[in-house]
Amino acid sequence: MTKTDNNTLFWGFGLSDIECKKIESSAPGYRVRNFNASALPTDNEMEGETPFLIWIPGRVWVTLDDGFKSAILEWDPAQKVLLADARDDLDVERLLDLGFLSILRTPLAASKVQETLYRAREVHALYEDIVRMTREIALEREILSRKTDYLLFLNKFMARASESLNPATILTQARRDLCSLFAVSAVQGIFWADSDEEFVESEIFLTFQEDADIQEQWIEKLMENAARLSNIKVNSYQLTYLMDAEAKVAPPLEPGTDRAIMLPLKAGGKDFGTLALLTPTPVRLTKQQRDVLHSAVNHLGLALKNALLFREVKLKADHDGLTRIFNRQFFDNRFMEEMRRSTRYGQDISLMMLDLDHFKNINDTHGHQAGDLVLKEIGSLLMESLRTTDFAARYGGEEFAVILPHTGEEQAWLLAERLRRKVEKLNLKHDGKVLSVTTSIGVASLSATSFSRNPDLIKAADRALYLAKASGRNMVCTSDGCDDYSALLQEQQAGT
Image 1 (cartoon, helix red, strand yellow):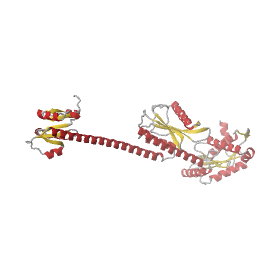
Image 2 (cartoon, one colour):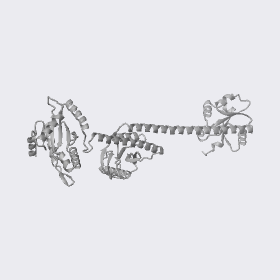
Image 3 (cartoon, helix red, strand yellow):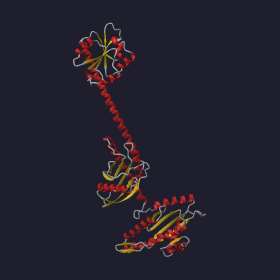
Image 4 (spheres, one colour):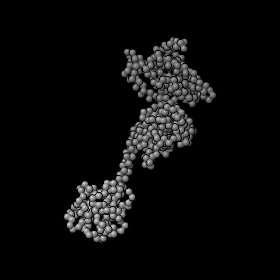
């Protein structure tokens, strides 16, 4: 079908030749396509063309079936003009109400045709304005709906990010929430503390990948980002795997691909971390998506910074600042918990009390810095030597305490003896001088089969420690004596 300018096209339904010529001569630039009354336009013709006006004689209108009449009247873009002569019995008011633009009496006058065309142009312009306004309103509603969705996303994201003070939990939840913005298969990150030191330690959170080489590449990439943003050398890191069962990195994803979005994390105007968002396929975000993502990440940065600060404060509150192991206050709370657990489940429990021998002499002879060095080394030795279920704390001064859950007296004594020997073998130097260190250890236990569940285990361990110091120091004693398990230890050593 030849392309037609619909704005210069009229349709006629059964017009006479005289009527066609009169209409075209009265409306220069317009042409009439006249359909025979017995061969009216098909659906395809109505879809292909939209005439500016449809001229329908009254004598033809009354012969049309009701279905075609309804189709024509409901065809909004095309305006309809009815031509009526004196013989036509037509309800003019009803026809105008049905949608006819005008009713013209025949024979046609040029002025009436031109007046009708002028009115049609006005109605057409008004119709186009309404269509344009409708489209604009629909577009504005769509934009407003999208903005509302983004605001709801940000509100939900911010609320979720503030629910926890655990960095790993915050990152895991952030990945799940970001999936409503675009597909995120995994989240990784690195954080570091603001420091004036030349070197700084970082903490890395990774989604586990089976390919060890790619995992090392990610660690290196994140540390490079940390060094670049912090302007200091990140010389060590602590690695934590994010336990996110829904996170999937398949196939393995190397750094530097278009499936990874790297974002800096700021708090107080300073960079303190880098976030890596891994996507299943390359992502091209719209400007609005980028703006929403940056708003979400800015809030995520604040939530993560608060979590890291909380953990740092809690660490300082629970740990001894010098030895890095737990302090007396935290020990007292943990001891009560372990005693209640031991009583409830009828389990063995033991307690070791350690005291460094002649520690005052080290401070007096070599200075307090030497004494601090010894205490730090003892703290490190305890963390390295004990089992994961054991709990060590600085009890006060040069005295340490170790809770041993699920441990009877015999096993506790053997563990204490091994610890005593490790202390004895420490080779500590300060200002070029060797520091000799030994420890006396008292052990007390409660047996699961014991009829007496006397909870004063601390007093019993303290008595055993006093016995060890009174018996010559650098030994392990229980409240019953200092040689109870020596024979057992000799048998074990002989067997090995």
